[in-house]
Length: 252
DNA sequence: AACGGAACCTGAAAGC
DNA sequence: TGCTTTCAGGTTCCGT
Image (cartoon, rainbow, N blue to C red):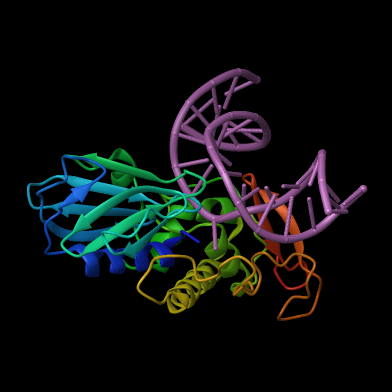
């Protein structure tokens, strides 16, 4: 689930595997011979800074992940790229190919345009309220706007709005300061939960095919709301499936 | 400028 | 069983 928690986990993995080491082999010759200085994250983007100032941006799209392998290990199924240092090979695997890897000398526009990152910059209720108020769409769509808050995707938005008891179709303008505070709390909790799910020396998905859904609301239309037992509904907002409880999520 | 919708690509799960 | 449809954690482009 490449949303903020998964990407943060990927960041920590890449940092552990690569920082301080020199690239011995990579998908781009520009990277070979460079030492990896740092691995940063903003929203769903990763930025690796190399000793010579070269930058490597990585976005995991829908199905991307980084996996640690031995340099001599065969290519993974759907492996798209690799970055090797002494003894460690980081493999980029992405079945759907929505992810991106970009070598650049300057920050990408997509990176620079990101709004505040909840972990890097903190998630302030007041700033969130101001950003939301500028949009005239539904709260759910506004939360997923990367310029409002970097890193929030379909799952975090869905879970946070359920926590806040707010109907995802509510208009941002209609939210009270209390509502915004509740959304902020919901997001912080969802991010913390997401991070707690991450484990292992691999940025792969926690849930392999067939594993059970670790979320309370996301992906559970038709099931009883964990809070009030009303059957949860699925609607489409901004082209994305959205699950919510019509019983206890209020429309503002 | 802002919004909805299609496109990008591939696989898994559900439906018939 | 097998063929078809639907859906998927994200972004970007295009036409209105």
